[in-house]
Image 1 (tube, rainbow, N blue to C red):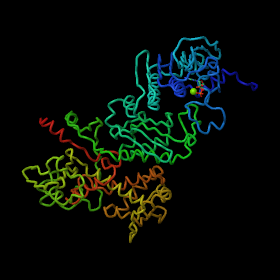
Image 2 (image 1 turned 30 degrees about the vertical axis):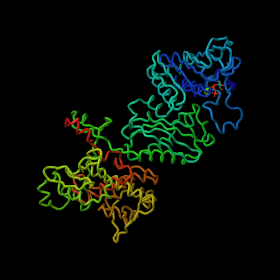
Image 3 (image 1 turned 135 degrees about the horizontal axis):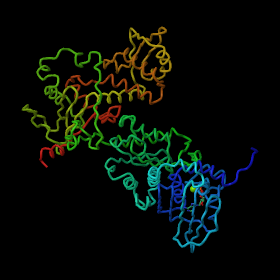
Length: 622
Ligand code: ADP
Ligand code: MG
């Protein structure tokens, strides 16, 4: 075949392949045009999932009758004029492609009446055939009707999913756009039935509530952060609202809903340790920045962008999310009304099942895990391994100075800490620290101003160790203890290889390890914090090398956190360890000072709260 210039219809259809993927992309383009036209209210209607009909009506600036044909012509736009304009795009559209592309694969009727014009005009098109504009009676604004999408490109029409599935995509697009433009009213109708109706809202919270559902409202935290002209605002969900998919995560950049890996990563980083790694937070964030600092011209649908300084954006988002979460009391509430349901397990108030941490092997050298420690004392035998340790509790109560336990019960607000338990008079002085007891060598039970706290000793201590290690590494003050006699371990070929790439990370965490033969490694220094906690270097190094041989670890921040996780888990007290009163009170004191103490580093709760209100209700006092 000889080379030829393609006819315009074909060119547009090819372009449509990129811009117009399905009804949802048509809706997106039409709504963005309405936004660019300064609309204050936008109506969207679809029939048969948008396959048969899409109608978008706005009250924006309108198009003059003599420009209707031009609006439908490829590369015709009123939004940019020179190459320089591409450097700082402030409108949703700029490619001048959408209407022409849509018109090349459907039957379009474009009607418009500019503000201030006497009357409107309307124009029908089919393929590249367009008639001449006829006068039309209508209010100011523009209406675009798209019928029979892909009627002339059967291959693409076959590619469409069921009306139901396409309708769902359109609904998602409309929700994202409604979140992106809180100042604009939106109405969305599917086969004549109203699915969404929001008026221009005064506050972001109002819009988020209207679009994402009232039930999320209680768990929405405000986010606000800035770095020069880079501004972040938004609403993020408490960890309990986390989902299995990214569908409830909305990022809006300069009014444009975008999908961006850098920002998604930053958001999840902000939640690190508060949600499980496979989960996605619920979040709606608006980012504003100088349009010259971001390139939106990298994707035909403009849903992906390229930041000039992704690090800066990443840091801002992560910081904003972290500080919003840090300011909150994130202890999940034990819901008695639900926990009495079958299957025994307690449930959090949000309905997310609470899974206890898996049992940890009592590997701590000299640890007091079952079978590992000294024989039980007579007192231990008396209470049994699963008995309440009143003695310990009483000591914990006395040992802790008020300054250590910041969650002492307020004199007026809190419950009476001197309440008599099991006939043992606990004469707690007023404003004294709350009592704490260890239960089944697994949990610590204490109180705060709102009620009863049940703490998973391993999970909380793991978080404490994690934060201490992290803080010291970031401050460059993690002490490393050299060994007089290096500890040697055997390693496989893959592990020897992994050791080399692990070196930068090992240095950061205070581990010195070097090959001393083709199949053996000597560990000659280990973090003091772990040594103090009785963690043996050799088995730790063995499991780290095994992990690194499986998949490269690298020395990214993520890798560092993963290894800190491993260290924290090893160093933490285990389920089954009996804690001394001093250990209990120090753990409780650390709970108050450590960041994100409500969850262990894996995102599972460390603490559950049973409120006094709930207890009173259950006992029929209310
Ligand atoms: P782009 O949005 O990239 O400019 P489009 O093909 O989407 O390209 O639209 C072409 C032109 O038609 C726009 O630049 C604008 O001038 C005009 N237009 C399209 N839709 C509307 C609308 N709803 N209201 C006013 N003008 C519109
Ligand atoms: Mg456009």
